[in-house]
Image (cartoon, rainbow, N blue to C red; front, side):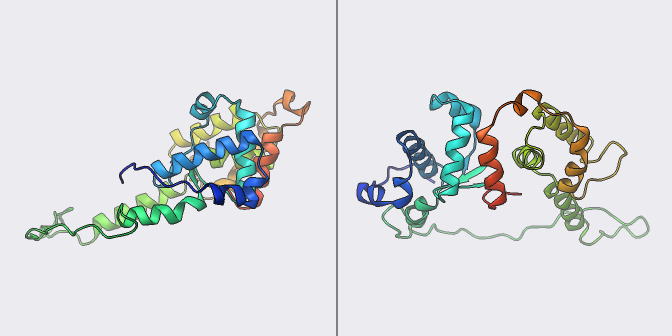
Length: 232
């Protein structure tokens, strides 16, 4: 969709109870996120490392602000995508047509020619195509791929179960399973990654330094996961 400008409503911003709960820095980040949502059709990819540099903020503070925005329902996080509920009504108008929801002129359709379905494979005896083989293979492939979580969900779940777990150990385990086609060290397919990870965590080392101080960002992220604000 076209990256057009949009109307800003100061009265709605100033009268919002949830915005009223935000500090000046939290309001600034929320305002930036709204711009990103409008430019990305409300499917903003979470890029923590980039945002740290762009918004001149440290990682812990960034996570803490995102956590607060999520708790106040100003944003929603799903995997590695970020969604702003307040932007959706305006975006629906833009999706229907840039002039406030009017549908654009329909394109003139040309002559639609039939699509010849390719032969997937042949039976050895009579040379006839095997029916629905492509669909079966695609369905199986999709089932395997959807069983693999995004790394962000993986590390958040690990920290919720064991807050002081060493992140490098968790990342190494995740990458090992990925390289092994989502199978464990014994070659068994990982069907329930949460159960498998939970049983593996006791064997991974903890970060001793984190035990000596309170990590507020971990607390925020764990709270979000329990509230169902993050994809699990």
